Amino acid sequence: MESEFIQESKLLIFRITEEIDECSVQKIRRKADYEIERYMPKKVIFDFNRVTFMDSAGIGLVIGRYKIVNMIGGKVEMANLNKSVEKIFEMCGVLKLIPITKLEEAV
Amino acid sequence: MFDNEMKLEFLSKSNNEAFARITVAAFASQLDPTIEELADIKTAVSEAVTNAIIHGYEDKTGVVKIVCKIKENELEIQISDNGKGIENVEMAKQPLYTTRPNLERSGMGFTIMESFMDSIEIESILGIGTKITMRKTIKKMEENLEEDDFANSLRG
Image (cartoon, rainbow over all chains, first blue to last red; front, side, top):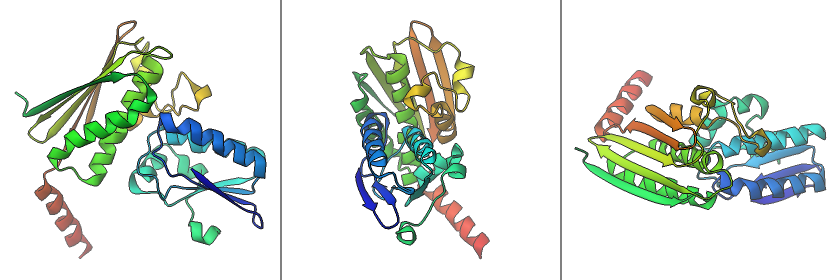
């Protein structure tokens, strides 16, 4: 996962580059939490552009970050979801909490 | 008699999850599935294998077995472990039910397997292990095309 922080808008972008499963999610989670604590962003966007696979581990990942970011008064959004990733988030109601956004517009 | 069959055994280490789902997908690809069907199969396999590793064996290391069979255009996937078993299968199948909320487990594993595959059977005996059998019929290319034609004709 790569991250980028845009100071002016206090926007933190997480570009996930790996397949998301129980194995990879622990490392992603650790890095994401570290960056959130470091930058205290107003908004966090997960960019799924390079995610070729995701199972239910991805649900825990975004909901967990949502809770943390919510606590510091920030918002979480997701961008560039492929069909199967969107299907999983849709199925369990994540999209009601964390909306899909267009990354270009947000930046 | 099945048209084709393969067996796979590996240690219950979470870095084998990708290996397991990619291998099953490679075997399933002889049925000419669409990219979406293949993604569904990989996700369902990943959920079942994760369950075997995280819940079945917990901190111990055991062996996860996968048997895949193809008959005509149906794929059958059996994923089994000799772990601790599921105490209450009906409860485990409920959406959002998890025994490990502290690990950010979503409790959506069985729900995803159920909706991504055509059918799922769960056999589990406490202290003996769990066996998940999932089936999915892969539509023939012509059927997919026909469906597209039909959809297009509706759009006019």
